[in-house]
Image: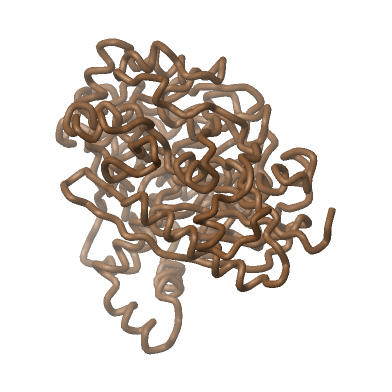
Length: 527
C-alpha cells in the first residue's frame, strides 16, 4: 500500500454531487460539493438533465484534485442515486431528461405489467415491489409517451452506469443498481426474461452486469482534462447510493441496521441470503459487499419533510438563524427538545410524498392529528420528528417478520448530526443508536470500492475493516420514554388505518389492520 495514494468516492445524489478523497486507511482528506437542479414539469414528475451530472462530477473532482495536490487520485468510484432512468444513444447522449427516483408517472405501466406478471410473482422473482418509481416502469412509460426518444435510444441505463460509461467508455451496471430496475432475477443475478417481457423491455438494451468493485479502466480523456486528473486514474464501477452509504458506515454483517437520514430515509439491514417480509414493506437487493444482501425500504420524505416545515412554517426560526449565525435546524431541534416525548398527544403521519411505511401507498397523505389550542409550533416539530421514527419502527417490524433480529441502529446522512433525532430513534425502537464521525458515508462507501478496484485492498471486507470511520458512543434508549412511545406508536398505527379509506384512489380500504402496534401493513400494494 502506497501511503500517498488516495481514492475518490463520488456520491451522485438528487440534490448534488459530493466527492471525497480518502486514503487507504480511511482518513478523510478533502471534500467537495456541487449542487444540482431539479425539474418538476408536472405533478408526480421529477427530472434532471444527465449532462448536468457530468459537469457536476468533473467540477467536484477538479476541486478535490486541487485540494489534495500533489497527492494523486489513484481511482474513483460512484455511489449513485437509485431508480433513475437514462435513455441514451450509442454515442452516450441522452434522448430525454432522466426520470429520477422520485418520479411517479408510470402507474399505468405498472398496472399493465401486473396483468402479465402479478405483483407477488414479480416480488418473488426480482425482490422488488411493483412500483412506478422503479426503472422498468419508466422505460415502459417512455415507450408509450415518447416513442421518438425510446426508438432513438440504444441503451436504458441507471445514473451510476451512465456516469461510469461516460467516465471510461466501458458499459456496465452493478447488481445493486440493476436490482432496483425490477428486471434483475434475484436468484441468478441475470436479467429476467419474464420481467423484461412484462414491461416490454429488450434486455439487449440493458447494460452488462459486473461486480461493484470492477475496474473499468482509465479515466476518459474528456473527464481527465476537465478535472485535471492523472491519465492513470482508474474508474471503478461503484454501486447504488443506499448500498454505498451502508458500506461506508461499516455495516456488512447481519444484525446492524443502517438508517440513512437524508431527504428520504432509506433503511437497510444486511442479511446473508435474500429474504422477503410477508407485508412487502422491504425489498431484497444485493449489497455492494459480495455474498451479502440488503433488506431495504427506500424511505419516505423524512429530511425533506423537515425542510418543508422549515421553509413553510419556520420563518421566525430562519430569521433568528440568519441573525445569530446558528443553523436553523439547531434552533428547531432545541424547541422540539423542550416538548415532552409524545408531543402532548400530537401525531404526525409521515406521508408528505406518499407512504412506504407502514405500507407502500403512493396515495397516502401527511397530517398532524390531535391538535388543541394548547399546542405550539414546537409541538408540531416534535411530532414530525417522532412520526419519522414511527415509520422507521414500521420497517424494523417488517425486517423482524423476514427473520432478522436488529441489534443496533447506525444513523448516517446529514440528519444524523442531530442528537435529538438519534435520541428519539433510540427511545422509539428500543435499540442502541450510533453514528460515524463522518456521517456522509455514501461517498466513503464508493471510495472503498475504488480502493478495491485499484488493488489497495484485496476485497470489500478488508476495505471496510480499514476505511470505515470510527463511530461515536451509542445513545441508549430510555425505558420510560420507550413505554410512552409504545403507546404513541399504537395510536399512530390506528390513525393510519382510520385515514386509509380517505386516501384518493385507495383500492383496499378494509385491508389495513388497526388493532395493535405490532400488526404489519397490508399485503396488497397500491401502485
